[in-house]
Length: 225
Image 1: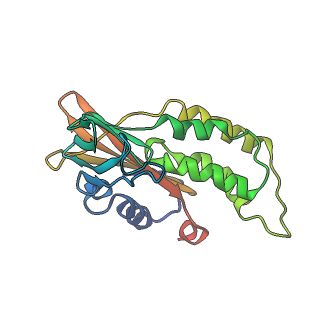
Image 2: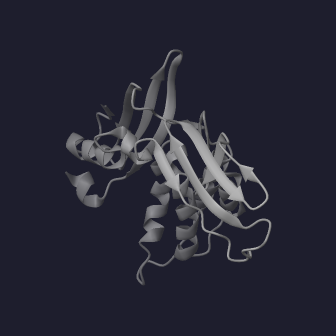
């Protein structure tokens, strides 16, 4: 763990934050490499229509997606790629679906109020596991999220710059590897006085692969410890 010499933040606080995000078992965030998803039948489909979904179930286990969808007239079984809650998953890893990135790009560079900012950050946070040091970009938005009657909304050039930077970052998001039980995993971390960041990596024969990013801003109480 690399903590800046100038940082006054307690090392124990950083450790607790990392454990909260990765847990004692770093694989827990992926539910032990297994996701089971049951899709809802589309209400607009009639029971006797050719496209009616009579059974659907998806499973990701040990990085090898298996997805079965049964229709009245056709069936697709054991495909190697599925879409799950905005994530595209295949045998190699996971990546963000294009429509999520499109939502981020469609936000204006200048956000009009706190509600608008929260909407933008909400979509960005959804992509957070793909973004290195997301807290660095979020730092300048914190005062705007604390807007009160005595402190009115004041959008400045630095905020516009951060929105543009996040859009650019989200145009080039990496594909993340899916860790396996037998993998050798490493967590790299860093922190300064106002933020912390970490990345989960797995070792491979040619080096290392990224599995997940995490991080955040310290609260005022944490920063004073």
